[in-house]
Image (cartoon, protein in one colour):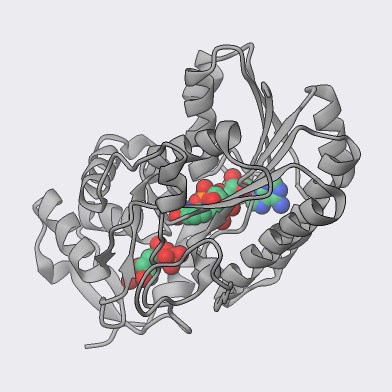
Length: 341
Ligand code: NAD
Ligand code: TYD
């Protein structure tokens, strides 16, 4: 394994993973294959393009486009696909699920077919804790039944099921990781932590859904990248591994911490109408990946602290996104008139 195709590599986690792998393995080559949707951004890979000119390449392409996927695999002698490409935001999946079905389900199938036909060494699927659905108590294990509840979660679950089917049916060498909520550098400011940090920096209200008591495991993105690396090299073929800190924080506590770190007042918190079908809690049992030799470095609070610092220091990255037409229209559609007293 040394020629990776990182699909969705111009997004948040994929760009962090590309940087991590090129820094760690001097003999690896990475071709990022990305459609550059609203969430894909070559600014995320600016330093990578500068620092690794001979070992990094970018191809603009859709994972649903079988011909371009195959051409890219041939042209770059790809032996491994790591699939991050997806529509990823639950609220957008509630507004319009179509692209989620296309990319997260059909696109996954197209990549699997290419991996099978071209006999790649490995296909790795990046999945999510959301496939387990709302977890009222305890923690989800990899063997638990999946019970997705949002269109996003259902599309990601369908992708996972197809990955497993290709392993069982065609003996395709696959692995899957299911990550908790990632935070860190280059996360599009629609997800709650970068949204709240950047709003607070501008003294704009923080739209907190419902009672704010929903629980999430906020994990630092580089910890997640380490886990994916470990599974690629030491994971067992056909297996799925949960990746999270194993701890959790409710949204209201996360919000207070963000405001405290920025020295901003709590009066910025604006309760808004809850998300439809909102999963109140996710929780992952991470003992399986820990047995493989991994452990999370950052707690949720440490991850939030580092993330806040990055957004404070990197206005060049997020200001153009937030002032752009696409973001402004999305924000209006998503939040206008949603306030509750
Ligand atoms: P992101 O939205 O930041 O990036 C997604 C990337 O995929 C973008 O660069 C986009 O241009 C690209 N893309 C979308 N559709 C495509 C298509 N049809 N063809 C090619 N490229 C396409 O997402 P992220 O937060 O980095 O998430 C990456 C992966 O990790 C996703 O599969 C997601 O489900 C999973 N995941 C995310 C989290 C999280 O907290 N962000 C947690 C667990 C799992
Ligand atoms: P999000 O970042 O969208 O991730 P996910 O729903 O995939 O876990 O949301 C994280 C939590 O924050 C979730 O409980 C919903 C909540 N949330 C808000 O309270 N306000 C917001 O504006 C957003 C985007 C999310």
